[in-house]
Each structure stands twice: as C-alpha cells, then as structure tokens.
Length: 333
Image 1 (tube, rainbow, N blue to C red):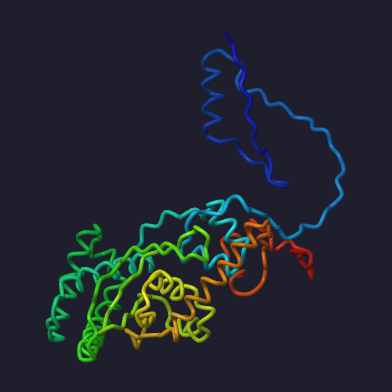
Image 2 (cartoon, rainbow, N blue to C red; image 1 turned 90 degrees about the vertical axis):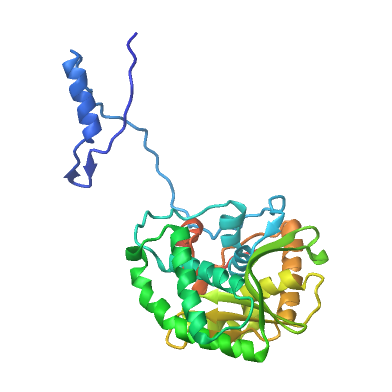
C-alpha cells in the first residue's frame, strides 16, 4: 500500500533562498534510488483575509481555584514583585530552558560553598584555632569536591576567591566563638502553617541557624554583591527572603530572633548584613500574604505590573508581552 506524507519547509528568508535540510535531501535521494519520483514540491495556496490590528493589553489572569497548597520564598517574592510572574512561574509552572553549559557557573560555586560549609560546621563541635579551622575548611572543600564530582579544572576560576575567603572566614568565626554564638545546624527544611493563611503552608530550607543563649540567628549565605544585599535590608519590609525564613521559624516559636545575609564574596567578605526587627517583618509578610490570598480566592486578577527592576530582568516578560503594550496604558484590575 502506498502512503503519502506531507512535509512543510521554508524555502526563503526574505529574498534569500534556503536549501533543504540534509535529511530532506537524503530522503529525496533514497526515493529516487528506489525508482520513485522523489519529493514533489507543491506550492500551497492559502485563503487570505484582512485583519484589523489590535493593541496588546496587559494580561489579567485569574486563578482562584489554582492556588498551590504550599509556597516557597521565591514564590512569595514573585507574587510581591509582579502577580503575573507568580501566575506564570508558580501556577503554570513555566521555566526558562537551562542552557547546556559545561563551565562551572557562579551559582554552582555557591552550591559547592554552601555544601562544604555545612560539612565543616557539622564536624566542628568545639571552638578551634584559626589555623585549625583553615585546615579543616580546606579538607571539607576537597571532600565536597569529590562528593560533587568536580575536578580541579572546573573549580579553578573560583579557587582564588575561596582562598581569599578562608583566613577571613576563620577570623570571623573566632569572633563568633568569643561572643558566645554556637552553630546549631544548616540546610534545615521547615514547614510553617500560620492560621492566617487558611490551610496554605510556607515551605523552605534555611541555610544556617546559630544560637546564643535563648537568642536565635538565621543566616542566609550569599555569593552575590554585598551592595545589592545592603539595599534589600535597608527597607526591611521589602526584603522578602529573610522575612520568609523568619516566618518559618516563628510559627509557634517566640524566642528572640535575629537574621542576616552573610556575603561570602568581595573584598570585605564575610560580611553580615542584618535585617532589623525581622520577627516584625515576618508577621507583616504573613498578614500581607493572607490578605493577598483572600483576594485571589475571591477572584482577583494577577496583573502584569510592567514596572521597576523586577520587570527589567523578568523571565516572564516575553509571555506578558510587556514590550508590546501601548504607551501609557493603564490596567484595570
């Protein structure tokens, strides 16, 4: 039985002719060798119709029945920065394609650094000298390198940064010991069910918790620029991440709580950037999130805001068509 197949290909790019794919040419050759006529080129004819250009309005999706059972720090940050980004990345689950990159990236260095610090601190049951700490940090680095399957060449771009950090981190740790701080644990998975959230839970992983008497401090390691971190904590109510992690700890725990980013890169690393009154920020974040969720469950829209730095570097910018909105358009929410 003879069957016909149809393929569509592009023959021109503007005025420039385009050759057929090698696969198409191989198929054509195989057909001719088999005594067939080869591939017949047919010029398709399509009905044409005139369409009136319509402006692209900013999207206003609604998802009252699609809210997830739990939210992470990044999901809450997306909702606060731009509700449409929350819709695209959290509710629809869309992600950018990750490019195949063989070279180790800064985020990979951060992951390795997080893991080796966890390995180092879990083995450090009592204070030690700075020299001993440096030696143990190097040993933890080698162990984590082997566990992660990284070779020397892959880590080479970051070795200098790590070596610069070692003596300064050891000195910082000596000061922490003298002040009475004690490492509790790291990479801690927490789930918090605040009553205000009506069944939705907060879920996340805290980089590190230290204690000093009854005082707790949550620490979030960062390998990014300290200047950007300083800007975030300057206005505590705008810093979602530390407030979110504090909300994970404050669920039923009323001990005094401090929180800071610990910048691990740069000339003055390690540098603590404290979030003042983080317990108050945590409660404000939960109350604000509860109000937002009530509105969304009642059918409120998730508008694309189209403004600020969050829009400039947004992974959903192409989806909301921000670059094609009419100038001066006002959204009706």
